[in-house]
Amino acid sequence: MLKLSDPTLLKTESFINGEWRSSSQTYAVKNPANGQHLADVANHGVEEAQEAVEAGYDAYKSWKKTTAAERAAVLMKWADLMEQHREDLATIMTSEQGKPLAEARGEINYSVAFFRWFAEEARRIYGDVIPTHNPALRNLVIKQPVGVVAAITPWNFPIAMVAKKLPAALAAGCTMVWKPSEETPLSGLAFAELGVRAGLPGGAFNVINTLDAPAIGKVFTESELVRKISFTGSTPVGKLLLRQSASTVKKVSMELGGNAPFIVFDDADIDAAVSGAIASKFRNAGQTCVCANRLLVQESVYDEFSEKFSKAVAELHVGDGMAAETTVGPLINQAALDKVEVLIDDAVSHGAQVALGGNRHDLGGTFYQPTVLTEVPFEARLSREEIFGPVAPIFRFSTEEEALEQANATEYGLACYFYARDIGRIWRVSEGLEYGMVGVNTGMISTPVAPFGGIKESGLGREGSKYGLDDYLEMKFMCIGGID
Image 1 (cartoon, rainbow, N blue to C red):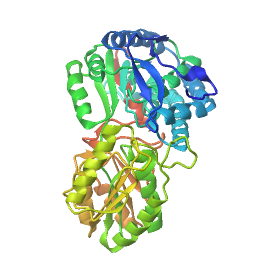
Image 2: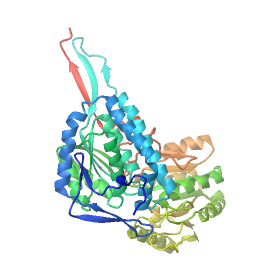
Image 3: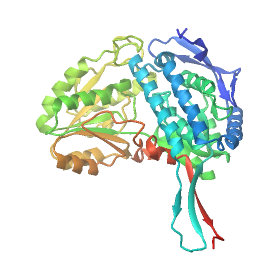
Image 4: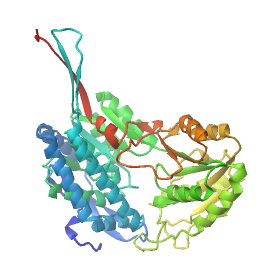
């Protein structure tokens, strides 16, 4: 049993129309670090999802009429409560997801920042007065909430993923129905409980727990009451949701897969590049959509970087996320572990060398050794596929042009990183990389004040920043006559 300061935060029901809803059907949530049974969570289906959508629509009728100040007050109170209960939220998250406790605390802080940002942005939803084309007319543009938003998020950041969506939606005057991952529902349910305490009205935020994600996704995409879909997850599932949403022409936001290059040029600060690569690659055991997937290193500094990087990786400590010394936790499940092994075997079969790790960890379960592969050829699958594990493949390149060509040789375009000091190179490479986000001399780029999102098959729309609010607003043109 989880040891929490506030045991009432451990919820196991769905949250529909302001009420906690149990079910005769449940599924087990287990700790990936040790297999410990944490809770049995309600398993709801199509009927409850439709009810949640209707509750969201009914709540939208009144929520959209609240003032920006009223919406901001609820979001600020919610943020305060997350801060007050940070340790309990982090404990729940680490227990069901596996990430180190320090990272879980950081995720709560990150989520709080989004709530505070959008609470402030609620007061800045401005329109325009357009110079008239006719003296008898006046042209105005106003912005109004989209309506009911359906959100679907993954397991790797159980609270942060919805915290990038929900406060923007609520600030705009929308309501939301959310399906969290079946792997990590407990974090989201505790998060929802704090929303109740913050004064959010019933129906404004609904949470559906289910093992039947395709059926719930179909309810969301085909419902005429849902006017927007916000999804974070794999590109194949995102494409399916886009196809299904076409029947009702919904507004959509898609934060999909990534294949982030991390480029180290010969004029880089190598020690800084090593630190940045460690932070980007091994956070959450490499299970992030923006983590460095391919390390591209210029040949003149290849050996130096590889040696220093391998030495730094060897200092990482694998273990249960609840242990203070742990820096790398387990993978989320057996399928994730199997995928990592397949990709490493494929790389080695193509000539890659295992410089460090390369095996399951002695701890057993889904723990895997932090791994460094050198001399990796671009024919290897992990040059094209998301690894989603603690594996860092290092590729060689010779020229700036070759680095850009290799970095852009993917259908994905979410995040990328590079280290260099020449100002001309920084501009050329930043403009030449086909990605929605570019980290220059840093491996950590996400912040509530900047737009998060990708191009190509990595998605549509942006989260965070002033631009993130636009995805939850519709623009309305008003032409007013009879002025003369």
